[in-house]
Length: 349
Image (cartoon, rainbow, N blue to C red; front, side, top):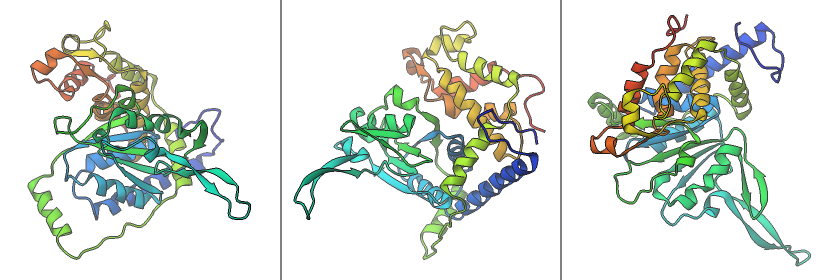
């Protein structure tokens, strides 16, 4: 097996490593099979959510109401056997409504009062932050420490969150009333910004067939929290060629208008490009996608397939782009075409 680990990884012989890879692929197939019983279409969205999970990142889903965002996340949590909690973000939501708070309790035997911490919904394996852009930035920022550090601080006390910890936030398009743009610092914590679009006519007919009858489907867990953590470690062991690492860096640096390698259209339309965190996330996501596609190394197609969802929320466009109705995806399509991958590295074998 051509998978390699760092010195921090426990040594594995080839037989044991092969068994872990096969188990990962079998679990992924079972999850996808279960999801197809409940979710119609959206294969690319489901793949990106699972890639983000196994890469150890968080995912932001942008889509209009009524596109089954909540159902999709709940079903994924059921199939993974993880603790799932949901927060409906509203304009009056407070940070303590997310993290939890201390309350005063009286001991019935001694009569003494003491502070007791009551955990908030953030103490879960999968947290659905529904319509995260419906609440002001002060409350949105309560997620920052949790997403980056896997912990939260309440009244000066530090609390570790369960592992794995995966935030899947949904947001409505900004042009809808009553929404707040997410702060750039929070956007940067999301591995993907996945766009959930409308289904085709045939798929919408299938939705009607599934949801307007007495049919009930129960998705059974196919894995556990401990196994998912081992899968996340396994993903990091997938090798990537140094030429592909250089390609990822070239792609990310080309999003920065002040970079010498930035194309003219980037310099014209982009105010700020992506940071090195984007390059880290592209490589991790590409490793997870390669393993999910039954390959034991990263190919350039993994990078080009996932570059847009990693980068679309990390480039900030200027007034020229706004006046000409240029979207981030327009820039990224041109950028991927303008920065070709290394010759002979596009497809896996």
